[in-house]
Image (cartoon, rainbow, N blue to C red; front, top):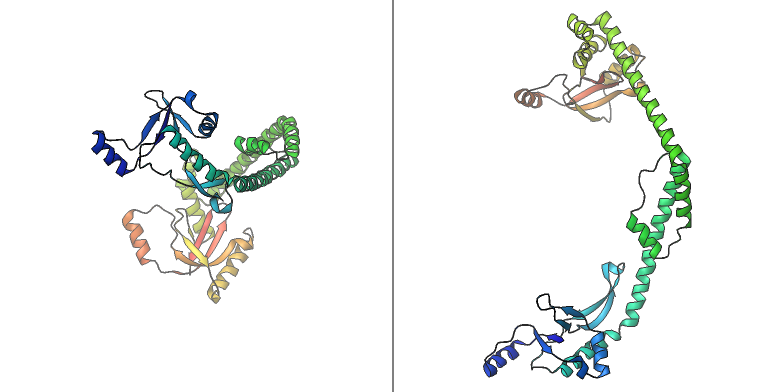
Length: 337
């Protein structure tokens, strides 16, 4: 077996001068453990042992000298010893000298064991408290899923549950909630499938109602182009929106390209107030709260703009008051004032 130590630069040089051999920065002393005393072997059992992957030789590492103990991460982490690197040897040591120095390093750590154990216990208590809070929160969420009869969307990570059990957290409510949920989950999934099917059918019914409204409006007011496209089954959402907005909301631009931007206004002008009142009076089907007076900061557009047009649009636009309508079928309609 071997014991590893670090020589000083002075020892490396002196040994080279005396013996013609230059020591490595780490040196190993070969020894026979049978020749050691029980006390010396006891010291070795407390030292870290490694194995050389090339030779498979086992060798002991000189312990660092301990100078204190602290709790890591601003008093919230695990306990840790403060250490200094093991002193280098300035003479070639015997195995007895190596063990004596190792014993002194271990003794320096022994004097801090009680404080280390105290900090470790405090950290364990903090960890248990933190994990208990996570388990309690997860339990309440799971009970909420059960009360609403919905399938759960998340749960604590497996490692969190494992650690919580290892720390001795109270898992009784969690385990009971999991058992209850697992018993009810098939019914929840069936109910959820029914809800999703009903929602899908309702959404399709709304879409069909909108398509029917679009066809009915086009039959009475639409252009020949719009009518013929709808007859072929084409959606023509853009054309329909533009034509309907032009007839029902003259002066308003449908913001199909979502280029319009506005922000709240602190004090509207009389013109804006009158315009809003006129829109509300003319369109009782529009909710009052969906007719807004805003400060327009970017112009709306009903058609795609190429890069040159967009630059011109932006450079020529002047911020101003506007009426913005959030129409249930046509989207945002904006009129600059």
